[in-house]
Image (cartoon, rainbow over all chains, first blue to last red; front, side):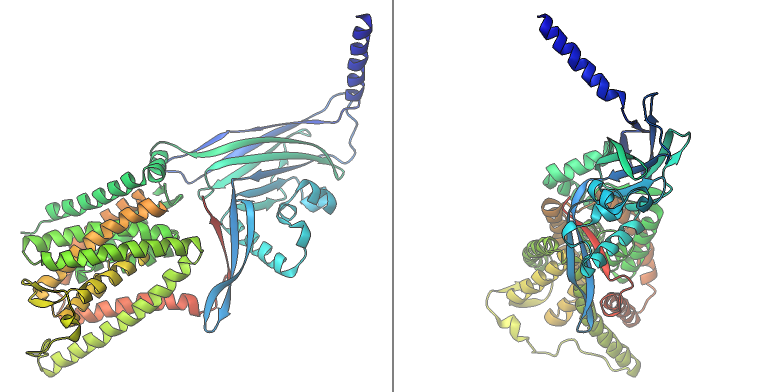
Length: 255
Length: 306
């Protein structure tokens, strides 16, 4: 038995020894974990709060901290089409599919992601829109770049994609906040929030959390009814239309 | 005031949609047409996804044609027997239309199909209507009465088999061309979110010589049942009918139609058909511009499946 106890003590000492030169830890929290869509929903704003935790053993950083917050919405097959001239009309001819692409994709950071980490790091850890969307095999093909640029441009116009190099602000040297703006067309589902801590071009640690966007009350009931009992739903809409049409003849009867 | 559409998954300005419903309702009341051919393009124009615009619009047309058909029914200006034959053909057309709609949607070509159909259908029908109404105006000015039917004249297609007698419509002939017409119009109706009254009424008058007294009521009767079937089929097969949007359009449309009907009574027959022809051609042209002119943004993004 004493040998077992000794081994355990040694093991604990070892763990403590490793932890002795420990790096920073990251704590992140969201202002809410659930966004409910109601009949007057016009979008929402969620705030990510976070703190960089250090203690006496943490090494001093000369370069200061950089934070990158990446929010990824539900994933869908996304298709970008390009209209080309065929004869005298414009048709959707070529296209590029982006399988499993987050419908909502927002990157917030303390400064431009190119300044935070080098290209290899960004591609490896998927930091910044460009690195997330890049297909490693054909990253620089002109046709690929063309569709990727169009995707980012159109989704940015819709408020579904964004890369904001001043989106994260440090309130104190170790406490930061970043707003996440959800446009009303952002889909329902689960949104992953990843917070990455960099210093001097090196990823120190990452922390993930998530929130969900759900329909509630009437909106939820309507969608469930239309999906699961579509015949009943269709019939109700039909009856409603008949009823309104009939009511109009009564209300506005002219004879 | 913003209102969230649960199926379209987007907020819309409630008053904008009510006003659109009222404006289209006014025009439809004035001309005695359903107004789907104006409403569906307008909905697409304000950003409602085409699939949802088309599917939901079928419910609005159902409501407006109930109001109309009941009015004609009370005045006994409706041929139930002819209406029944039209509805039978209409159900088939609606079914085919919804199946076509769904397969085009799966192939990602629905938007294009809608635009091209509007251009060709509305271009052709609009031009025909324009020529006809100009001729009528010209004849009215010269004072020569125009005969709709020369005595003893019969169209060849009425001589096909399966003949039936329609007393109220003063028609005896084959039901095959009548059914075919109903199938085609219901097909277009289900794909484009239109009732098709502005095609059906002139077709019944010119091809089958149906008397003016029963033609509008009978056409509304056919539209009512085919659009009701289309609402149901769209809801069951593609889940694109948005009930909130439908109610907004119906309420706006009902209001507008009442005022439109009063304004319509002051319009003369010929100038009225000319205006309608211009309206139809205008919609066709608007869509033609979309595919002929170099687009500002050649790219488009869609999410598949949800």
